[in-house]
Image (cartoon, rainbow, N blue to C red; front, side, top):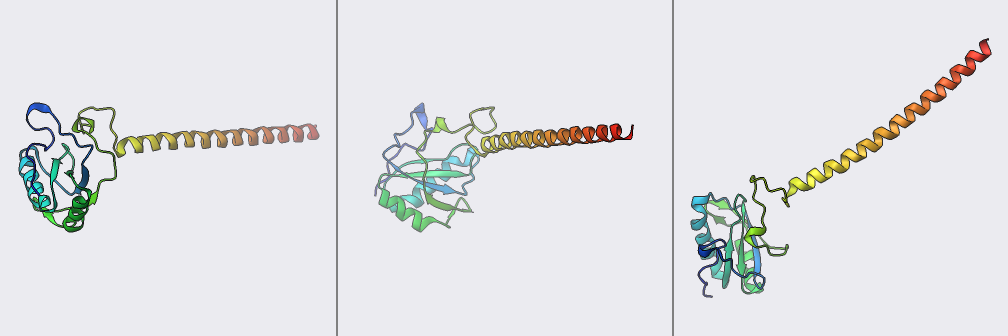
Amino acid sequence: MSSRGGGGGGGGGGAFPEVAHLTSVKVDGISAHQDEVVGVKEELREKFGKFGEIGDVYIPRDRNFAFVRFSDKGDAQDAVDAMDGKTIAGREISVSMSMQAKKMPDEYPDKGRGDKGRGGGRDRSRERRRRDDSRDKDRRRRRDESRSRRRRDDDSRSRSRDRRRR
């Protein structure tokens, strides 16, 4: 149950810990300004460390979640079961097993820093808007075609009426 030092993502020297072999627990509801990150990581290590060996604690910048990465999957599940709904840094947290592939810190998009490769909801909604826009264009085109057909039909009817009157 010993907790290795280092880790923490983005520590001194710029080297990131190897996390592929670890089991990640996602902790939602974490809010830490840059000057509070170290204290929050320490609290996460302290409270989650009771369940097993922690290989890394990572809080992505400008997000309100963290990952606590365990060496043992069973320990990670025990932590999820016991810590969900508890308090970290004065806020209630929601804890779950992470379902996504592990990312290195440099793989998270920098929110608000002009990064065009965002992977968040914003891209999905933009993509959805594009799809909706193209559907709207299709609908408009069909409606316009239908109107022009009606006009042609109306024009031909009025011409035939005109011919009959002559």
